[in-house]
Length: 359
Image (cartoon, rainbow, N blue to C red; front, side, top):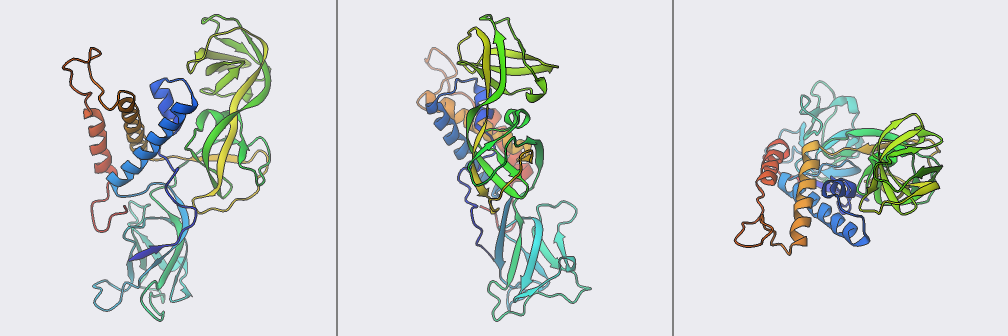
């Protein structure tokens, strides 16, 4: 059996969909109240999907301890360590009885489908071995990256050096792709995005108070990205396309009011409030222009969490008595058939069904 002594690895606040994912799907106006509701719904859905699949998907850097598999009456081969409820993405170090085992002396299995890996096997042609401690309890120590997969996407870059502060300023490409709930990595440090705030882009724009006026001319179009949401006065606009220094935008986005703007300063939610040193990593300094990466959950898991969160929000708004008919008379509750099909598909694809489950 294994024991976990990781730090900064609690699942609270770690989500498989972002606030912005759900808001785009619902097309709701941003308010402080619905932000809390959406965050709570995504949090609950993420923990629910982990319970459904009996595993956690996010990557955690940490050290875990395991009993020697060759103890008397254990029934296990002494060269094969089953990780049980722990899944390994990559191995940093392994010791047994206080003696370091070279990484080239072990195999991570199953090699044809991992990661994640569920077994660490001593290569029998080597002199390495498990055991040798005073007791079989916690004889083996493994440091590595734990979880399902470490799939990342390159987003963009920081626009200022990062020291000890908890606010991260990013470029347009990162702003367009990131959301509250995203797991970011800069160098070796992981961060959790907990909030976003407006920051000046350093540019101005002019628009008339016409829904058809969707062309916003800026000084430097390369500073923006498709899908980024901009703020001019109190009106939000979404960038749908970019041609040189011309942004094609959707007006009055996110429930804001259409208005005229003349040489108005353009803001974007590029100031990210983050939890530093997350998921077992250590907070560090980072240079301006450092590459920002985002961890990506499996697509099916992302879709299921988003669907569960949306369903919960709609039910909450109707007092958990949502009807298919607007008349409210003798109408059945809205069907969960599509969500249940997603759940079945997610469990078939990602559910742990054998031996010791993760959760």
